[in-house]
Image (tube, rainbow, N blue to C red; front, side):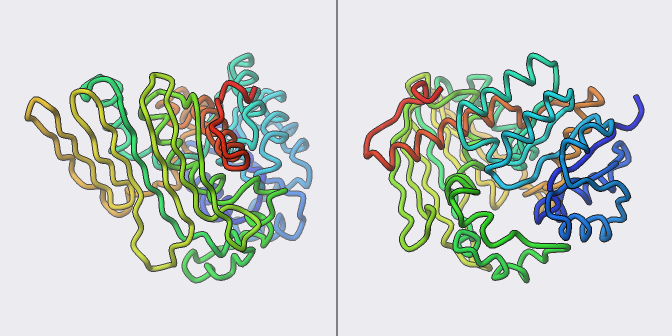
Amino acid sequence: MAKPRIGVVGAGWWATQHHIPSLKTYEKADLVGIADVKREKLAAAADFYDIQNTFDDHRELLASGVDGVVIAVQHAFHYQVARDALDAGVHVLIEKPMTLKASEAWDLVERAQDRDLHLMVGYTYQFTRHAQAAREIVRSGRIGELQLVSGIFTSWVESYLRGNPQDYAEAFNFPVTGPEPETYSDPKLSGGGQGHLQVTHPMGMVFWVTGRRAAEVFAFMESYDLAVDLVDAFSYRFDNGAIGTMSSTGGARPGQSLDQGFVYAGTEGFIRQDIVHGRLDAEYHDGTSEVFPDLMEDELYPAHATSRGLVDLILDEGENRAPGETGARVVEFLEAGYRSSASGRPVRTDSLT
């Protein structure tokens, strides 16, 4: 097959720092155009990366003959752009969170299935060898029946949530442009704060590793003086009866060490997965154990892997490590969590669609 023709919708921070350079340097891909409604951002990205074809309407890009599209726009617009792409017969990689509503996420899954199209979500951590190993251990039953998943995810995104993205310009070294002030701070665009921006990452891992789905969610969230949540604590029950917890804060500061990881516990043993330090080990009730080689620094967060993964799928190579079904399970988890925090009651995910 000829190189897949790929377009990128969105010329903001994440696209210009990761997706566009990833596709430009991937020998299997042909990056043929980018689209953004904001012409200054579009022109800056096109000039920086020497991209000839630009569009201020994503539908024109979709009609130009692309095979796949990477969608990296503000959260509130994910669903509409992805729906248009799937309806145009184009394979899709959509950044996380997949959508802001469970009904929209599952609609995208159904549209992709009906059209035999690939649908991926931009979950980077799933592309590490530790993630694959954890998944194989849990899915094989080596830790027995799943009973508990405990997770923590600390990060430094508070300035994004406050609308001050330039606080991180030195740390992130934005190559073209950083996020706009309202992208993550305005709930009309972001949906929520730490949940939609960060908790989506670890829960994408949890649902991909376990193959399970949350049935019921109870959450506490605190925004303090922000318009969106900064600190979240979720308790939830899986569809097999297992229990889970996920705690997260965006209040860490650049340079501080982070805690990001999980314990998966079952009737026959448990796994510890430390994603920020690249460590993985398993202990079994029969007295045996496994310690996996640590990830190298450049393996911890393979940011280029998602857009290249879409190209590989179009070429019938590799597997979808961040499928739409996983993304939809995260969306319903988050929607249930936000509703629970607002109401003070647990929310069943089957009540959302």
